[in-house]
Length: 152
Image 1 (cartoon, rainbow, N blue to C red):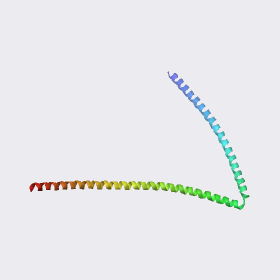
Image 2: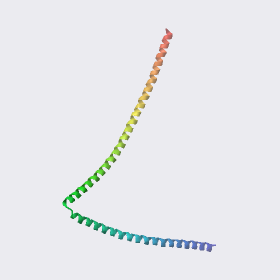
Image 3: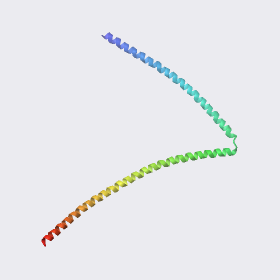
């Protein structure tokens, strides 16, 4: 009985080791493929960087041949782009401030609305109380008139 359990445990362990070994081989293959991809991308990156440097140098050399008016135009164009970007940032900031202030104002308006609503409810209840008192006084006056009319 113990031998059967031991044999079963050995078989399970053997299966686990075999499965893990297969997984390790698959992972190693994936790692190798990824390393090759990384090497390819490093080469591609290096090629693109050197191409970029070549194009920047070519552009710089071409700009040296420009007449002075063209350099002035390029400077103006650059300044216009800077101003446009600055204006866009400022418009974004203003839009954010407007949203923030609109929210603040709406909350203040709601607060004031609630405050005045509470005041109106309070005054309304005072008026209702006053009306009840007046009704009692009027009833008292009517009762007194009725009693005066009966006494005469």
